[in-house]
Length: 254
Image (cartoon, rainbow, N blue to C red):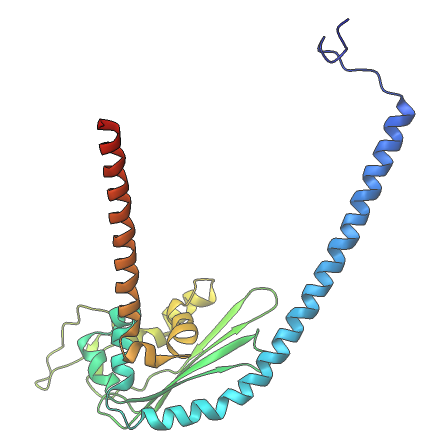
C-alpha cells in the first residue's frame, strides 16, 4: 500500500508533538545566540589585547624608525627612488614633483595612541626653492560613527612655484602649462574634503601600509622583481597546461 509521502500527502503529526518540536528548536536558537554573544565578547577582548600589543610595539619601533631616517638622509634620492619604484606611487610623480622629491629627507607615519582612531603622515624636506615649509603633514582621524576628518598642511609656495594650483610661472613671467596633476594636490583642501566625505585616501593607505614599513623593498626594486617572478610562474603554469592539453590530444588521436 502506498504511503502518505508516496501519494504526495503530508502525514498527520500529533499537534502536541509539533509544539514540543517548536519549543526545542526555539531553545536551540536561544542557546546558539548565547554562544554567538560569547564569541563576540571574546573577539572584542582579543581585539583589545591586539591593540595593547600594537601600542607597546609602536613605542619600541619609534627609536628604530628614527635611526633608519638618520641613515636614509645619507643616501641621495632615497625616497624619490623608492616612490618611483612603487607600482602605484611612482605614477603620481610629475617631472616637477621629482625635482622637489630630491629634497625629501624623511617620511614618518605616526599612529594615534589608541591606533584605531587615526594617524598622520609627515614629509620632511630640506630647504628648497619651491616652498617655505620644511614639514608637510596630513592627518586622518576616524570617529566611532564612521566619519573621517582630514587635515593637511597648507603649502606656502614660493612665488611662481605653485605647481599644485596652476600658479607656476617661468623665469620670464609666463604662466607654465601644467598637463599632469602634481602629487602635491594631495594636500589641497578640495581633495581632502572628498576624503572626509567617504572617499578612500588610497595614497595615505599605500604609504602607511606598504612604503613606510619597508621602503628598502622599493628602493632596491624588489617589488618589481617579485612581480616578474609571479608573471614567470603564471607563464610556466600556462605552458604546463598547454603541454597537458597537447598530450591529451595526442592520446585521443592514438
